[in-house]
Image (cartoon, rainbow, N blue to C red):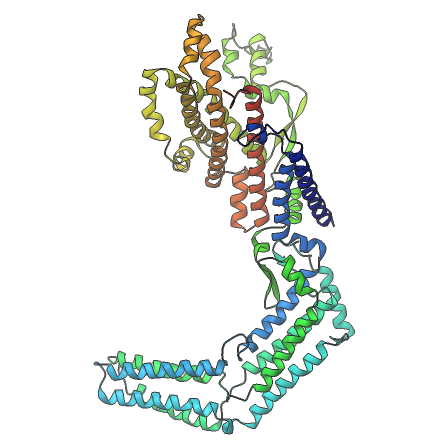
Amino acid sequence: MVTGIITFLIIFAVIGSILYGQRLIKTEKTDAVFGNPERAKGGVHWVIVGSSFLLLSWLYYSWDIAKAFYPKSANELCQVAKVNESLLSLKYLFPIEERQHKSTALIKRENINIENKIIIIQNSTELKNKDKELFVKLLNKTKKTIPLLTDERLLENETKNKIKDLTNRITWLTEDFQKVSYPPIKSIDEENKRIEALKKQLGWGATGMEVPPLPESKKGLKFHSAAQELNEISDEFFALRNHNPEYLKLLKEIREEIKKYKDGLDDSQELEMTFIKEIKKLGQRIEYESVFPPKALDEMEKSIREFDVVQKNEQGNLIYIDMFLFPAGTIVASGPTCAEDGPGRWLPKPSDTFRIFGDLLKPSVGFKMIPMIWYEMMGVNRIVGFMLPDWIADLMPGKYPVHSPDGTVKPNFKSKVLDIVTGEFDAFKIPVPTGHIWDSFLRVFLGLTLGIILGVPLGLFMGLNRFAKGFFDPLVELYRPVPPLAWAPLVITVFGIDNLGKVFLLFMVSFSIMIISARAGASGTQLSKIHAAHSLGASRWQILREVIFPNSLPEILTGVRVAVGMCWGTLVAAEFLAGTSGIGFVENVARKYMQYEVIWITIFVMGMLGLLFDVTIRKIIDKTIPWRGKG
């Protein structure tokens, strides 16, 4: 219901935004020619169109629209798939799914195999002539068994009657299948059992990719019952063998000759044993295959074609639902179970994804007992103790208190300072974020911040000083081209799997990027501006602060945007390798257990966090360097 309403709202938003955009074009300034950056400003309506298109594609290709408007469609298509699966084995007998009869294809194949084997035996230089003669004789006899199976006159009455009986059952099924009363209720007890089983069945998407297999509608029950009957017919037919007395007589004769020959072989005659086994296998393949006279199954083929037409007609609008609302795939059956085959299998539905995401946000559920993001009430004393170093107390005058003879310790100023810097005091509590998302966010923020604080000054120094450039450039360029993942095992080994190792790895990534960006910005400052500042009597610090740094800001902030993306990619990989919390850890565990919805949730969260960083930086760029692109 909610997905359906959202779908309509998205469609209306797209149409409304496009109409608004067309109207806005007519009122646009005439001097805003192509190439003018003013033309790229605004455009929130196109943001809505782009976002809506993305969400609508997700809803459509994940089959969530089908689930919203036709919630029982997957279950009904599951029952149709069962019928198609049952029919498939029977269809392969005839030129329906294949180009020719199965018997024709089998006979053609085995005749070729026998002829090829005869040629190999005759050309062999290691076999004796008497062995060659016997092998060729056995192969010719095996070849003669085929006409005994395809001769209409040798087909036994019992086999004919069985084929006729199976054909009639398909014909009766075709007639009954079109009736409203099909399938008939077998007994009250069985109907009650079916209803009880349905009550326990989970809905479509409630178990991830699984489709509920038990029929939930009258149409589904019709196809389910037909599939069961077709399975019985198929099993009985493929258990049937066209083994008439003439064929069995010749087969027995071939086997006795093979057995007699094998008994006369010793362990040194491996080649002869190999050839006689292959000849025996050729005969066994013909024996186990369903080979019938050319016209023996004509009536059965006709009845199968008629049923196939009827079952497609009985699907009704389900055919169009499958065609238009299940793009690039459908529901397939494998025995009694069904599954999504197409983008709906690996692209989770938004409704399922947000439902699972809601569960992951709950502290009572979470992921591995840790919520994706939540808060906990933390005392200010713990925050103070974390931020202030303990050695501050050591710098205070005096000594730490010593216990008195009566066994008590009287605090002094120095001990009170120690309590403050270690957080050992009572204070009010404030909400502090916690969870997987917060852990990843904090790691990226700390690594990026350290990279900016240390990388920007060094980059500016290298861009302005010959010594700094010559001394630090080889060091930076030595480690910068190395992929961050190559450093990850070493960094994690040295610093451990805790936060320190991950933050240091992110610092390494952002540090090199910020050095390159700041250096490029400093060295790219226009010389005329520096000369103008000198002529006005500016000091070196004033030139750096008022000329070089502002001119470097576009490069620096662009470097920050690049560093954010690199940090996120590196963090996820680091949490893949070693971690007990964070987005990468969640995705890694979800991958092992094939939890596709959770994987997509982590991808979505990383994208949203990256977008949050990027939008923030863009706002900073607009506020701090409004002159960019106008100089």
